[in-house]
Image 1 (cartoon, one colour):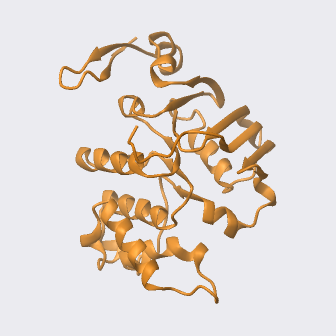
Image 2 (cartoon, rainbow, N blue to C red):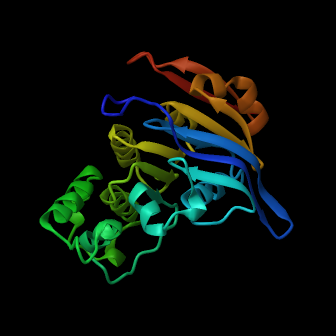
Length: 263
């Protein structure tokens, strides 16, 4: 991982016995997960496996049907939303923003948890917003209106807004979903270079290989957790994702690459 990461250490976000039910459908079953300070933990699994639901529960966006969530050792449901927002930022797959707002103001919303009558908007806040825009290669968009942006541009702005919160923990739900390959790689590099703890749901398993650890979800259950090469074995890829796979070695840098074939 990038040298900018802090030393990976104690748990900062955890859940125990976590479950979520909608009517008669149990979307998550008995999830136990500890996220360690400074790590990038990837969530992978087939469509419908529960990745987005788990992220929403851990962020406090939804309340679990069973189990507990702890943020820095405190029960999440007992914390004020302002306190949570100062600690944890979320980038959802489909997030809405008012069409009439411009990009700078949209990203500036990320500073809201830190503003009050005693701490009004300052030049420091403006500098943080500008830096967040630069980090996602969107500084040139700052005066554009939201409705004029492409899907990929909107996603980069949403990520910038999360960065403007200056969170300790960043939760991202497939953040590269609407981006071209250049910006996919750029965003992943930005995320991995941040001195924060990151929990990121990823669709691309080759991108997931760069995480410190991976959690594999299958039909709402956590079926594997560990280092990427230990978790994404050919047997696991066949059992969970329904594909045959083997590893190749990139001759450029020696990195492992997954090659897939249909079963």
